[in-house]
Amino acid sequence: MLNPSLFDDAGFLHDPEQWTEDLALEMAQADGFERLDPTQMAILHSLRADWSRHHGLPTLHHIAHRHGLAVAELERLFLDSEREAWRLAGLPHPGSEALAYMH
Image (cartoon, rainbow, N blue to C red):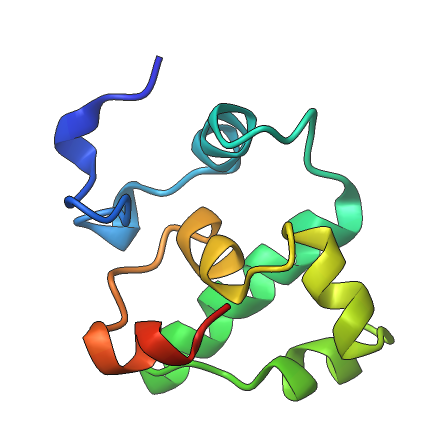
């Protein structure tokens, strides 16, 4: 069961260092995913790596290209929501302005 104290009001982890693959799976299952496949998990790790280097949002095109996917394929992997991918990657709330641009 997810510990609500780990998350802010929008469902983002307070501390990205608390993220684990098991926590991502638990979050995903709470959001209606049956599981996270290896491609989804690789994308979450990719988002985390980009964030740790740049502390910003990578573009969907960049992430899709890195994983050999079309943007539409990438979006489908995360319920048509880059917000969902960002959240499942355990990254902090990106800010209201950035969140407004996420599906």
